[in-house]
Length: 101
Image (tube, rainbow, N blue to C red; front, top):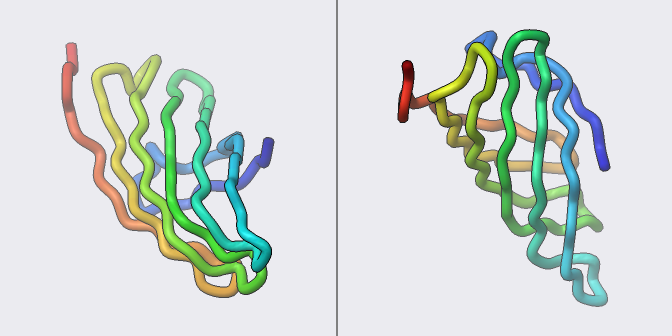
């Protein structure tokens, strides 16, 4: 498991995220990657899955994630696409109301 700090223009996506990472790599350390993520930001949280393709020798790749909110984020869904270049990730995404009560 990896912990990382998420910082975004939307404060609902800021905080510490914990992600699991699985990979099926070839001899060049390149291949598909996938896993789960969880964030607990006090009264709100996110849980979801992600998948992508990564080259661990260069730190480059991309991933897509979908998560569902809990607590204050209940009824929300986050969708995100990330691109990594030399180990630095830049993500774009959106938060949708899917079943807000």
